[in-house]
Each structure stands twice: as C-alpha cells, then as structure tokens.
Length: 598
Image 1: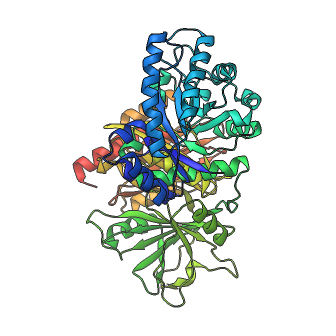
Image 2: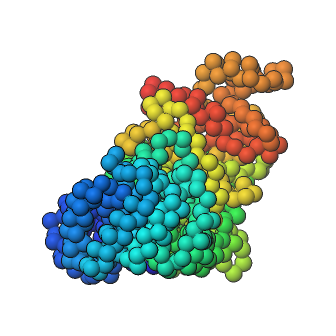
C-alpha cells in the first residue's frame, strides 16, 4: 500500500522536507499550505521537484471554515477556494482537505452544510479536484467522523468524500467500527497519528503531542483494519503535529516515520518483513574509553577478571560469571568520554535479526575486520549505540569470542553474575523513536513511560524487555537537551546477595554512592524490616523497593566518565527497576559530581 507524509510532520524548508520524505522511501506527500506559502519555488517548480524525487502530491491542505456559513460569507469562501483549486492544478494535486468549521459564524445546520459542500465540490470538479471533508475533533458543530460522513452522504456529489484522521477519531473516544459502513470509494483520504494518553484540551493535545503510530497509546492498527474492511485503497498518510519533530532534523524523523508505517503495515497484514528474532540475553556491554585504568579499577573491585584480549584491537574482555564487559581504548574520545558504545545481544537467528533490522530501516554498519575475525551482524540504534547480534558458543555460527585470546587472569570462582539491565540515555529528540525501534526492530515489549524528578528537571524513562526478562533495556531522556550531566548510562549487574556484593566492592576500594540518612528514615516508616536489616542498607547505600511480586535491593558505584554500575538483587519476581528511588539516586549523583567531579 502506498505511503505518504504531511510536510507539517517534518522540520526545515519545503525542499528539505521533500528530500527527507523521498530518501526515507515515502511514495507521496501532503503539502501543508504554510509550507507552500513560505517556499520561494513556484507551484510548477515544486511539482517538478516532487517528480524528480519520485513523490506524488497526494493532498493539499487545508481549506477551513467554508461550510454552513451565511450566504455572503460562503460566496467569499468560494472565491478563496477557486484560487486554491487553480493553484492545485499548477501544483499537480487532485485532492484538497477541507476541515469542519470552527468559525463562530458557522451555523448548526447540516442541510446547509451539505448544500454548500456540494457547491464547493462542483467548483472543485471543474478544476479536476476532489474534496475530502474531515471532522476536526474541536469542530464547532461537526466534530465526529460519523457526523461528517452523514453530511457528505447527504450532499451526494461525486467529487466530495470524507477524510478520516485517526487522531480526531480516537482522541474523542469514538468507536471506529462504524467506518466499515462508509463505502470505500467515498473515503478519499486517511491520515494517521498516534498520541500519548493525556487528559488535556484536545486542540492543544493535537497541536503539540501527536506522534507516529506505535509511539503512543492509541489503537491505530485497529482503526486501520476498519478502514481497510470498508474498501479504502488510498495511501496510508502521516499527519503529525509535534513540537519535538519540528525541531529535529528532517532526515532521521522521516526514517522514524517510515519505520512506524512499515511496522503498522505488518501489524494489519499489509506487509511481511522478516519475522522478529527477539534476543535471548546480553552477550556483552562494550565501553569505549581513552583511559582504561579508572573503569578497570571499578571492574576489578566488582570482582571481574580481565580474561581475554582482542587479537587485533585494543579491547579487553572483563568477565564475572555470565556478565561480560568489553573495555575498548581504540577510538579517540574526550577525556571524560567513557561511554557505553555497543551491546551484544544473544540472538536465536543473528542473520534473520539483521535482515529484519535492515527491512525496518535500521542502518547496517560496516565493520573493519581482519582476516579470520568473526563475521558479526551489527546495526545502529537511533542514539548511535551499536547492536551486535551474537551466537555465543553456538556451533556453526560466528562467535565473537573467537576474536579474543585468553590472558593469564581466569574468571574468579564464586557467585555467578549476569547483566540484569542496561540503561541508555537518549538524545532528547529521539526518545519516542528509540522506543519504537526497540519494539519493532528487536522485538522487545515496551512498558509504560515513567517521569522521574531530577534536581534540575524531569527525567523521562521507558523500559523495553523480553517477556521473560532475559533482556531489559531502560531508555531515558534527560531533563534538558543541553544538560551533559543527564547523559549517564549504566550497567546493572544481578547478584543473589547485594549486601555481600556491596561490602566486597567497598572492601576492595570501590566507592559506593552515598545515600542521605533522610531516605532511610522514610524507608523505616514505609516498610517493616528485620532487626539490623535497615542498618546494613544505611551503611552501604543500598536502596529498597517492593511491588506486588517481590522486592528489589540495589546500590550504585560512582560514575566513570558517563558510565556507572548498579548492583541489583531481585527477589520473588519483582518486575520493576526501582523507579521510586530514582529521585534520591539522581540527587546523590549530582551531589557527588558537584563536590568530587566523580
């Protein structure tokens, strides 16, 4: 099925938007009137530019406040419309969007609205144009899709049909099943947008918080199924008003938009990309640093051993149980540039996972490989993190460990550890894109977003995971686009005894994040503990949480560059990440940075 995007969904000049839409693989565009008015190109030049880019102009929008008007005003509206239709002929667009009136002069008279829309359609037909009438959710008298359809049906003109917009339908809580009663040939256009579920004025909701399908809380796929059952054969088109998208680069936003439509088409049965191959575990986390000494000291204190070194690159493998951390000193970095740069994901089908990623527009990264190096599949996440699809120790498949040579530091015996979860801070404008990427490309299940109070703003967080919790990734976005302190990443290590692990780390010289005494006073009021239990937590800076399934104990190392480690103990099936403790942790980390720079 053809895909289209409204130019209002992207930032930049009209030519930048058209180029981004074409490169992302869209078939057509809706040209928003303001974009055309601000362009130095003539309509003929815009038409030629679209043709060169392989884009059709599927819709020109919008014409507003034109129906159910007093006759004198309607006559003026027709004059305005005639100019728009002549412009559309020059532009090469054959469908115009007409939104239901919000004018205080509009009359509550369906018969008059139908009669005037019929006259408008007659004028449009003379210019080779169709009129797609859309009910705005805040329309003065017509605000639902079924009401708009009744008016269109009453007008009974071949050049007049309806435009369905998922936001306007779903934001009002309308039942989309009635769409199936509309003849498919009278659905002239379909506009799609998702949105987070918010309790606010619908106009402000629409103008600032729409997002691409799969990034919000609406059942956009369910609505599309109803539209398809009605017999609609036009394009799936995105019309998204979003403050973040308006400030982001058009190219990546267009790719995110196209990925959302590819995923939507898969959901409703219109496309069959390679099946998802959900990861089954974390093979490794790779840190890039200009100086291995600080992070090596932390790993050593945590009980990790340097067990191997890459044959041809300055990369060391540190391991404790099933938890593996690569320390890479190759790329040039800032002095404080220790960062989590790559993640190895255990995959049941590495090649299949890469094929799906590529089909959903994830960049497949070239690798500099020496002869004999493992041929690993690797793609880039929206924030630039490299994702390796791994098959550790599986015969017949490339094994990343084959690129490493053992060193004389075998892994220590004792309690087996593993990576519980990874936390990756996203650029402020890519948070929703990252959530969709990890769900659609990697097959991870997203949880609800959580807002956490930071001393300098709000930190937004959303976890994605496999159903069994073998892979957990927490996506966060900091309180401000330019706040470098917000861009910390961390590796959470699972242990069966966090008290013992924290004590051993401290005894090995590792500093733990100090937690204010007020936190423990509050903890004593909220929960009951065994004698002496809370004293241990207070001594070691261990935080505590409980949900309906179990308990969670966790503590933190100091930050090295942009990375810190978390020790966690899950008991009884606890499912969360200690979000209730995050404000205390963030305040403590800010305090450490301020006074020690660590």
